[in-house]
Image 1 (cartoon, one colour):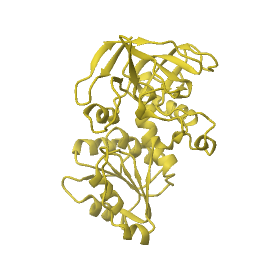
Image 2 (image 1 turned 45 degrees about the horizontal axis):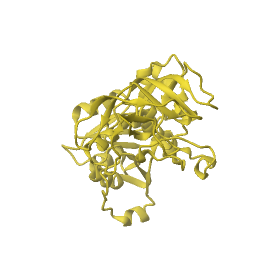
Image 3 (image 1 turned 90 degrees about the horizontal axis):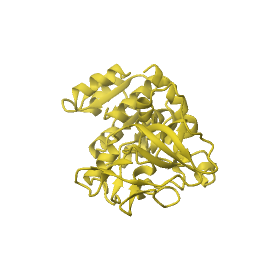
Length: 326
């Protein structure tokens, strides 16, 4: 099968013909129909994130059709599936307490399947799987928990995006922050994930929903998808603008870009009792200087968001039908 392979960080990817093993028990082979291009793959490719094993097939969001199943798998040949980079075991501490996105079997940075091995090779040399799913390929083998069935009426090119960017952005609002109707929101960075945070805000009837970016065209796109206001951070201080629009600051801020300055601004723009949700991941080792005093005295909260705190088997199928009217 063909795949786009990264042989060295900082170098171009190369299309290669790889050998692909049949799925083992608990695994499925998926013929890829579409793959998204996640910014995390750029970080892996350009070296911003260190320690990425090579050679590796990138791609952590995609959709396709099941072609072959291993023993003990409930999925059937012909099923349409969304691929998720977060496998679940259903037995570890995090799965049991309802936080399967933190499953102990999750190890996307190692480039292997949950059992610690690979299924791809090039002339006898193992090739790693990015994010457990390796979607930049014509076919891929994944653990069954990474293949989530989706309604066959959902176009697979749209379903592909649900697997990461949609789930991460919408989930940050609905699951991680649990934003209530009428709460104010500000979203720093309105790329693929940030736009889905905007849509999540519209879904829960947050108000206002403020988009912050340095690219005017992105702000216009954000307005089309539910933002009530746009702030061009290249032209004005976003903290002052958010306070002007909300009086006391935003109840919730979301940082959907790996930019440490945006993190500091998002924390500063919070209202008393507000929550800042960090979604974007900066380069390895990045730190943010924060004034701790207002975090303590105003009871502000700063928290991370991994994969929209997804419960993939429930959340991804629910998001699928929304793509029919998108």
